[in-house]
Structures are given as structure tokens and as C-alpha cells.
Image (cartoon, rainbow, N blue to C red; front, side):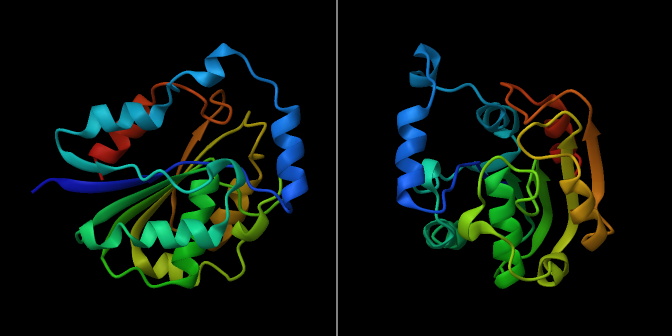
Length: 200
């Protein structure tokens, strides 16, 4: 039986509908924006498929995300998950996992959680976290996973590197993977994380 990994992508959230409409109106685009995106999450699917069953759920309304909607959709995947699953969250997907596992008991054993470029709170962010904001300490989170990996880059202009320290204080047993030049990990491949996942 293959190992399993669930990858939760990032997204954007707004405090109200008017902000969302303004975002749509003022977004700068080019032709590439309307083509199939090349992102490392797609790369992971191809790189891991021989040894992993890779779940990449498309979370609802990623451009105007709501925690409750994501929670409902995420829970639909649970019946297909086995014990010792790996959960990976990128950016808003990371804080979604942190919040979910802080407020809910996941019914399967979690082998590891990887949080990539994940905000802890809205300090220094350009955008609101809306209802994804952590409302409780991460106590239940740390009790539910054997390992936690925090993956950040010092030059991330979307999620300040200082957000890593906030996670480290609470999740003191976490393993850290620091980069200096990956920004917000807008890249089409991520060999370092593939190697990490294969060795978990």
C-alpha cells in the first residue's frame, strides 16, 4: 500500500466582499495568468506518485477563501485517508491546517505536518487572514502529529520570516528548513521538499 500525502494549496482571503471586488478590479494580469500554472505542488504530484498516493484537493473559492468552506471540503477527504498520512499546507493552506488541527481532533494518525511559508498571524502581512486567524494555542496540533516541519525563506515578501519564530515558540520540537532566496516559493519545482518527504 502506498503512503499518503494531502497537499493544501494557498489562497487569498478578504474581510468583506467589497475588498474582494476591488482586488479583482485592480489585479494586474498578463497572458501567463490565464494559462495552466506551473507550481511546485504539481511537481510534487509527479515526483511522489510512485511511492505516494497524492491528494491535492482544490479548496473552494481560493481567491476569496473562507475557513468554514475549506473545513467542510477538507473533511470530505477523511474517509479516503489511512493512518500515518502526511499533511502539507502552503501559505493560507498551512494556517488552515494549523487552525484545523488546533480546533479539531483528526480521526487518523498523522505521521508529519509540513507548513510551508505559513503565516502565524497578520503582523507584517499585506493581506488579511480573515477567519483563518488562529483562535486557540497550537496545543492540540502538536499532540496530533509525530513530526512538524517549518519551511520558510528569509526573502519572503508575502509572509515575513519573523512568522517562523512564532511557530517555533509553540512548536518547539519542530524541524526547521530555512532558505535565503526562495521568496514565497513561487517556483515550478521544489526538489528539497521532495527529498524531505521521501525521508519522513
